[in-house]
Image (cartoon, rainbow, N blue to C red; front, side, top):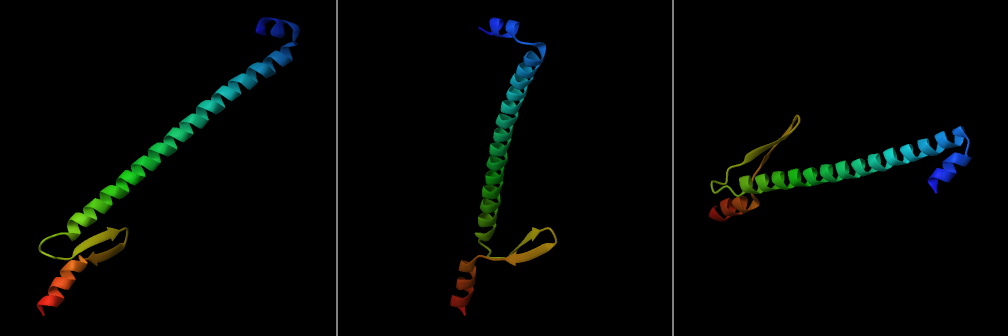
Length: 92
């Protein structure tokens, strides 16, 4: 089928068809790679968020009820578990 098609067509048509096939193949590969990289980025982003959340919870559940520092760039805050505050208020 393709053999007869290419024998009857001019060289310009052959070049256009081959270029179109190559371009389509490259575009499909590019699209698949983009999808995979986006999924990997989302996976690692969610994994990082879960790790940070777990770390904050672990630090907030400290038995000593001491405040801890959280930094983000130039910003810095002191955090403490609310149950520690309730314990201190009930003792007073």
